[in-house]
Length: 262
Image (cartoon, rainbow, N blue to C red; front, side, top):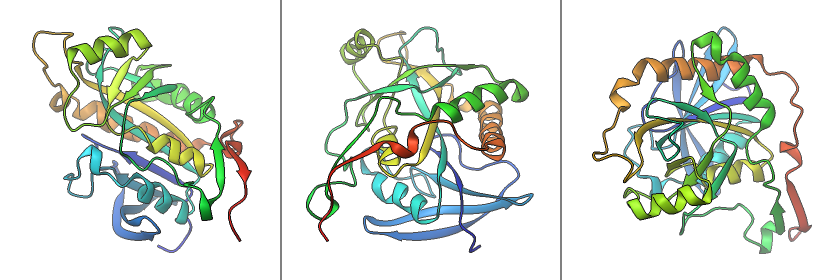
């Protein structure tokens, strides 16, 4: 399939296929290493589907090559990306099996390659993160959610941790006091890298457990969410299909302070 793609879905734990699509596996070579993606078409609509943890779901959060993944999407021509994040709930208003649009984040990761712009040949840049997630695509998700019998909270602050270990109860209490609503291991630096490449990026978190210390036992509901995840995947496809022009600042986020070397 040689046509340039415009739309992509990135998913992690729990979503391994998109209903109605047949995909071809493709390895995309990037300056940051290869990225494995799935390319499919349904009713004339082209879609790139990327699993963060690899095609066989064996790559742990702290080993994901986020730069290769996002760069591969740019190479394929992708400008609009919708993602899912499996999370633990900190906010009692987002119980397990609940869904929420991400609107901001707190970054507690370390040791990850979090930028395409490391100086020297890439130049000195800063990225505006006033609105990390595309508001235009987020609004469309909320508009279409009832069609798929899904209730999605309109806002949530995502706390990004390194993994693969879970957080301690003391850490969760700290995140709560800082304003965090949900906690996960894969949302950052992915959102930052997409922003650096002027890619429209919006995210829906789905809770699979209460965060550490909030309940006596950390029970996971991931196995009970199969139908919800299928409807969520279908919602994201419909959103991408119905998007027209986007009224947002996503394509103007990069602020070049010093141009790269010639």
